[in-house]
Image (cartoon, rainbow, N blue to C red; front, side, top):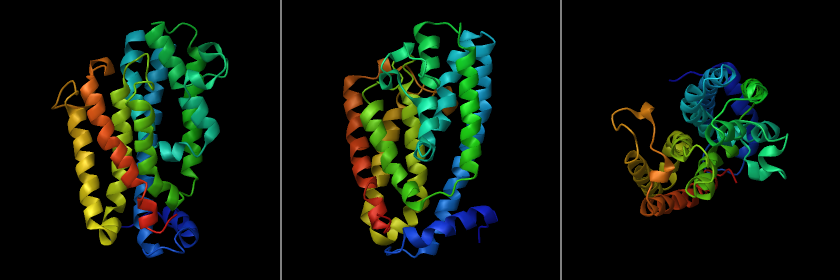
Length: 278
């Protein structure tokens, strides 16, 4: 039997009685998936901290080329865990807000985080004046890690996170508005898919007990999305090489991605109810 740190089990147990009081699924059956998901989030947070250090260090060193290269792979770790990161609205805004969220756009002093740095690196093609923004991002990421370490993960938030990630893809990634200057949208797209698929994989055995056809359908749609993304990898044999610019994605493939993504979002939105967590 798999064992978990006691602090993870205690956190899961503290919410399961309330969250699954009306569930068809036994509350204790959710402990393992929720605990495994927290470990997944913590692993990605560790990588986010490490890679943000390298990314912000390159900016502070004035190394534009290195900072540009590290922008997308660093963000992937944040994109995978957004359902949990977004529980801290203040940090999510300072880390991941876009210029549209501010009255004065890029000139607004409250516009910070990845996308403020993206504008400098890929629109202005400069690191000048970005030291404070880089340090602010690093501080926010460290703060996020500390807060999540102490967080008890609500099961309904975890299970609902898969749908939330796919809805975000449909709303902002397919249109290309997320990374409008770097054109690294496919990296973020993959991060969201990774995060959603991890959630689904953890709760799949429970879902299969309720509706095996649902599981088969969702897995097929995930495979369709992954297959389309794979066509745009720089090196099919090296996932770390990343993706081509989103400008190179044809309108036909954008539509091809939108279809299964929308269906995935709709299907995954029913998972909480299936497990009695609404």
